[in-house]
Amino acid sequence: MAPSEGHEVAAAMEMARARVGSKEAHTPPETTVTDRYAFAFDIDGVLVRGGKVIPQAIEAMKMLNGENQYGIKVPYIFVTNGGGKTEQERCLDLSRQLDLEVSPGQFICGHTPMREMANRYKTVLVVGGEGEKCRQVAEGYGFRDVVTPGDIIKDNGATTPFRKLTDSETNDSRLRNFGEANIDAIFVFADSRDWAGDQQIILDLVTSQNGKLGSRSETFEDGPPVYFSHNDVVWSTNHQNTRIGMGALRASLEAMFKAITGKDLNTIAFGKPQTGTFHFATRLLQQWRRDTHGIDSPPDTVYFVGDTPESDIRGTNEFNSEVDNHWFSILVRTGVFQDGTKPKYVPEMTVDNVLDAVKFAMHREHVKALQKGLNGASLATESAVEVDG
Image 1 (cartoon, rainbow, N blue to C red):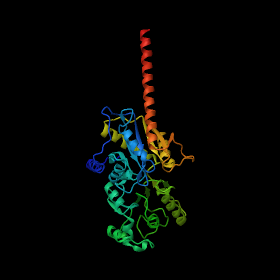
Image 2: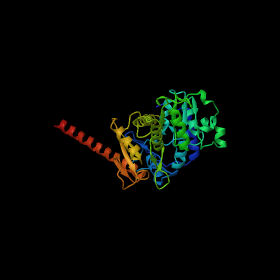
Image 3: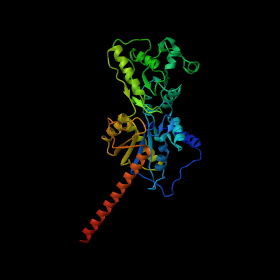
C-alpha cells in the first residue's frame, strides 16, 4: 500500500479530535489490545444508513474500544466501496457519526487503491461525485493532469445537448482545447450525478482514436481504459428499497457500447468483491496494528462485517480461500440483505446488526482462548505424568 503522508494523517486526526470534542469512551485501566483477531467493517448499511448512524453501531464501537466484559481492545479498519471525497473528509464524517476518532490510517474508500496508478497515466478523466471533489481526490493521489466532464462541456457545449453547466460549474471547470489533448484513462471515482452526460462523454472517448475527443476509431479498440472504483449494482440508503449504484452505471455503459459498436467493452472494477481490495485492506490493517498498537504479526482471524452478499460476503469468502489466516464473513440485516431472502453468497454467520456481530465474534474468540488454555493445561499435565512415570 502506498503509505499516507505523515503530516496528512496527523492533520486529519487532529481535525477529527476537534470535531468529536472532548468526549472519550471510558476504558478500564487494565484493558489490553488483543493481537489474535481484528475487525473490518463496511459502512453503508452496517454502521450508517442514509447518512444517519445505525443506533447499534455506536455501542459496537465502544465494545471494541474496551467497554466489554473481556477487558480488551480490538483493532479495526473500515472498508467501503463509497467514495467521492478524500479519505480525510470521509473520516471526519464517520468520526462525527460514531462519536469517536477515525483515522485515515484505518480507512479505505472504493477509489483508495487507485492512488497506486497515479504514475501510470498522464491525463485522466475523473467522473462522479459532487462538484470538484473527485478532481481534488485524484490530484491528492498524485495524478498529474486531471480532467472532469465539466471541462469537456465547457470546451464544447454541444457535447451534451441536454446538459448545460450551471454558473458554479462553469466557474469551477477549467478551459482547455481538447482538440490538442489525449485522455489516457478514465476513472469513475464516485456515483455519477448525470448519467446521460457522463456516459456520452465516456462513450466518445472509448470509441475514439487514442483518447482524442472528436476522433473515431475504425476498430473501436483504441480508446482509453475505463476503471470503476467499485461494482455495487445496488446500495442501501434511507429509502425503504435499495437504490442503483455504480455497478448499474457500468452495466449500462457496457450495454450501450455493445449496441453502438457490436463489440464488448472490457472495463475494470476496484472495490469489493475484488480480492485486490482485500489484499490492500490486509496491508492497511497490518500497518495500523503495527503503528498504533505495536503489533507486528498478522491476526489469526479477521471478522469482516457487511450488508451486501454480492460484494462484502463474496469478497471475504473468496479472499479467505487464498490466505493463511481466517477471514470470517458476517452478514447483517440492516442494509442491502433483507431477512427472508436467500443470499447468493453465503456468510459464515448472519446477525441482525453490527452490535450482534461484535458480540458474536468477541464471545467466539473468548471461547477459543479458553479452549486453548484448557488444552495447554491438559498437555502440561500429561507431560508431568510422563515425567513422574
